[in-house]
Amino acid sequence: MPKRILIENQNAGFGVVTVVPIVRVDPVTITQLHARAEIDMKKNILSALDIKPKKSNKWTTDEVQSVYENSITGIVLDKNGNQTDKDPKEIDPDKDNDYFPIYLHKVNQEINGYAIPISGKGLWSTLYGYFAIEPDCKTVKGITFYKHGETQGLGGEVEKAWFQD
Image (cartoon, rainbow, N blue to C red; front, side, top):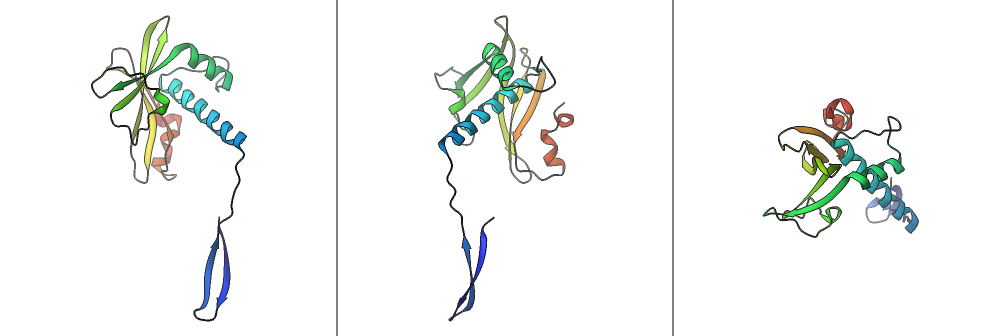
């Protein structure tokens, strides 16, 4: 929180100055933040596809990486439904309205589900998540929300298991 300093001004009597601290962020920290964000993205895609961790009830970084790399393929379709050579991680859902990332879950080379990034307006903010369907494209597999600015009431419950189940 910025510090407020009261200073005296002969013309106005007093004034308020806001002091904004300058923060230096180590490049290693930025790299770590990007790595954590990528793991979180992968974990949310796996969760939407109803893939559970095998070793315990919580995902480890190594398990997320392994399961994702061995069973998920990300592709991007254009607005006409044609596959492009774009990387799904580079599509900005707020700007790229002509490209649509899709994550394919494969088991033994057979498609076992599709996950798509979703976003929509809540009461106070935009909510971001992943929505997954079965290969029949009619049955929902799951949904996860990973980013929002909703308040602690009902809007803040979207990240909880009872809401997503």
